[in-house]
Amino acid sequence: MSILDDLDRQAKRIDVHHAHGVTVARQWGPEDAPALVLTHGSFGAWSHWVRNIPGLAEARKVIAFDMPGFGDSDAPPLPITAESMGALVAEGINQALRPGERFQLAGFSFGGIVGGQALLLLEDRADRFFLLGSNALGLTIDNDRPPLRSPNRDMTAAEMRDLHRHNLGVFMFGDPSRIDDVALDLQDYNTKRARVRSGAIPRGDSLARALRQMNIPVRAIWGEKDATSGRYLQDRRELFLSLPHCEGFTVIPGAGHWVGFEEADAVNRILLE
Image (cartoon, rainbow, N blue to C red; front, side, top):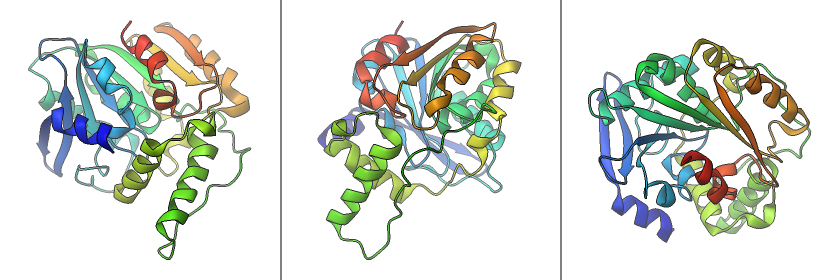
């Protein structure tokens, strides 16, 4: 994965030490540029943003986390909740930024759920919250899709790659023809290293409650073919547009759940507005 290896070499690694171990972040872009913090989805890592970081880092100080229990970061203590994960990410943001430095946060899927809890703790220095395909909104999650396939240890490398292609096509991409080698490599690498499961958290309403408590400007970005919203995309639009601090709900035509990867340029334009 040359694009991932290149970005990793270019990054400044930040090890955030806390009572439960180390949370790892990576930083790109000018040190004095406005800060943009990125949090990833379930079974992911900072690399969920691999298509976005090069463009964002031209104008932002980009800090992408491996959330606790993902990628290079140590596992969090049990039990896992949106609130406990958010507190650890908030501590990570505090340590990664200069004292008092302001920032915006973009959270993809599970990263948006966790990011909402982190922002409740850091609201006094946060300028904007971008949400990409996140659940925990107290709304119906559409399950009308083919089942995901589960790996087993007897699979060959080719069989495992076919499994990842199937699962990405079912859950993450609006157009399966856009699934490339980078997406397949990331899916294989990240799923093997994920030690935290989002479990029932996305089916709850922790993010909706956080959004109603905060006054930070919020901007929502959804793929038109997001597999989790499916037939209930309009419910998401109505929830966000009912918030007095919502700046907009943008639907990216043709894109699926992993909207930042599938339509990176369109998403970056919004994140850089």
